[in-house]
Length: 436
Ligand SMILES: Cc1cc2nc3c(=O)[nH]c(=O)nc-3n(C[C@H](O)[C@H](O)[C@H](O)COP(=O)(O)OP(=O)(O)OC[C@H]3O[C@@H](n4cnc5c(N)ncnc54)[C@H](O)[C@@H]3O)c2cc1C
Image (cartoon, rainbow, N blue to C red; front, side, top):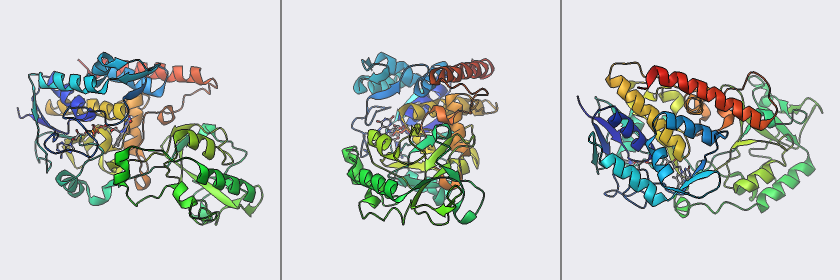
């Protein structure tokens, strides 16, 4: 049997290679470092954590903790190594970066089914089974090849993204639904601001601290999407003529146009998550809480994702991928990690596990499978495959992406516990059916 090619030995590629190797199938894991460096990696280890050493919460009733539980059931390599490399960090799973990635490297290097090849892959091998996990810094030859394979329009960078909030957390008495000039259905949620509210908001925004950011990020800005605070600093009215323009939007309560309007657009099929349109930002997260909650209707907004900025290459997954993480036009090509539009270390690793499981099934002529959307990993994959393809932006693990519960439990802790129970049930079914 021909070996499976896993391209990229980051979080996702390491997990995918591990799953395949553990199933007794040969893997060639192609990692270009240290021969070809990236602007952010500093070592030649596999699964290097390029920035924070935190893998986020380990508490079972948090979104990140839920994802970790699911990864544990699926036989995660990175989670096992993280637990060995753990350093004290309260309820978070933080690791000694060096020990963590050395452990992952050692486990893979000593696995009899794994061959690690330190070489840049410039074109995606056609034929056989290939997993592409080249990460947010994918560039060069393979970037061009992916653009050819998926269509150049389906592959892009961003430098700043807008925050997203849960629908439940918005104040229904201050917002209204409408599309600009009545074009289309009432798809947008609109938050109207009067002159005073607008000017206070503008002042706070321009005064707010911008995130210090990763040094390296500063070298990689792209002009595509201008952060809202940068637009604001150009003058008091620039937002009113830009992302906060009120034209074509009549507030049904006043029957008039507001001074300015913030629009929110639905981001997931379940309609539970909405993004602030045109609000890409580099503000520190605490500042985003403070400043964006000044917008009428967002006073108690629950942010499922904050605006962030760093370079990220990703494909338009809703156009190009199936929930099994197979490329739609070639089921022998699997994609995993941040290139698929998931964000974060563990999210990337988790998709690597699923791609690995499905590559094994594909080789064994079994149907590749997807996880239930009631699990965190399933919901994440669901989000990236079924979002609006015209406005697709990456997402991390979050309760907001799970389908809502049947009953309306108000207590947050209880609600999260119910999500955990639901995920446990689904994972147990999945294990019984598909894991040996
Ligand atoms: C600057 C920056 C800071 C970040 N900070 C955080 C953070 O603090 N917390 C967090 O949760 N997430 C963070 N992320 C996101 C995090 O990096 C990713 O979520 C995660 O590392 C992605 O995993 P991955 O496996 O998809 O990619 P990576 O871990 O980047 O792995 C991709 C691998 O592919 C290799 N590769 C690329 N192209 C080729 C090729 N052509 N041939 C062979 N090998 C190749 C690369 O060398 C790399 O080892 C950050 C991302 C960036 C860019």
